[in-house]
Length: 329
Image 1: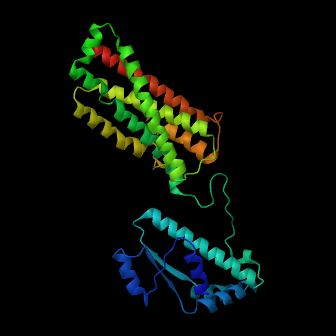
Image 2 (image 1 turned 30 degrees about the horizontal axis):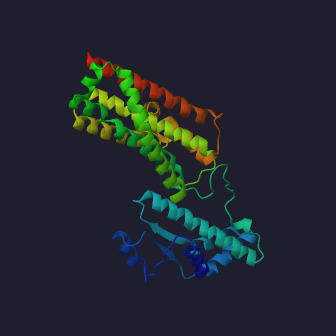
Image 3 (image 1 turned 90 degrees about the vertical axis):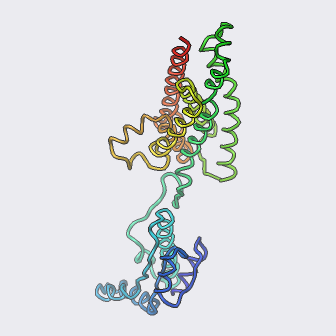
C-alpha cells in the first residue's frame, strides 16, 4: 500500500529520496538538503485495510486503533511557507486520490473514507497558484515604476541644462512643456507595456480569462499614472540623486501595501484605509478581477480601478503643473 501511495507522489512535483531511518532524514532536512521527511510504518498496509473494514462494520474502537497504525507522519521545513503549503496540499491530495482508487478496486464506496466535504472553484483553478494571484499586481507595479523612471529626472535635466529657461523665454508655457513630455514618453511607455504583457501571458503563461482590451487599457493607464508621478518627482526635486531616492523609496510601500503580495482583506482595518490611497491598489484589484474572474467593465471592482487611476493622473498632473509654475516664479 505504501509503495502504491508513493507512486501517486512521484507523478506530481515530488522528487523522493529514501532513507534507512528517520534520524538521517531529519538531519538532512535541518541542513537544507530536503524539504521534509515522511515516515510510513511497516504495518501500514494491513492497518489501512483493517481500518477500512472497521469503518464499514461501524466498529468505532477498532477504527480508532487501526487509524493510529495507518497514520503517515510528515515533518516539513515550515520556514519557507509557500513551498511547505504546496507540499502539504499535494501530499493530502495524493493520498485522497490513492484512497479513492484503492476503494474502487476493492468495490467499496470511496466516499466513506473521504473528508465529509467537497471543494469546487467558483473562479480560478481547484489548485490555485500564487503566481496567478500575484501576477496582475506585479505587472502593474513593473509598468508603473518603469514609467516613473522615464520621467523622474526629465525636468531636472532640462532645468540644470538651462533648457527650461530658454523655453520660457520663447513663450512656451509650463502646461505645454508637460504635454510635450507626456506625448513623447508615452510612446516609449507603450513599448514597455507591450513587452511586459507578452512576457507575462505568452512566456510565463499566466491565466487570463477576461477581456484583453481591459487588461491592456488598465495597464496603459497605470503606465500613464506612473509617468505623471515621475513628473511630480521631477518638478519637486532639484537634484537627480534626490529624485532617484524618492522614486526608489516609494517602490517598497507600493508593492507591500497595494495588495500585490499581501491581500487587503488580511490587513488591519486602519492599514487597509492607508492602502486604498495608493494609486496601484484599486487597479490591482481591477486587473485581478478581469484576469482571474473574467469580469467586465460593469462590475464595480473593475471600473473603480479605472476611476481611481484617472483621478490619480489628474492629481499628479495638477501637482506637477503647480510645482513647475512655482519654480518658474
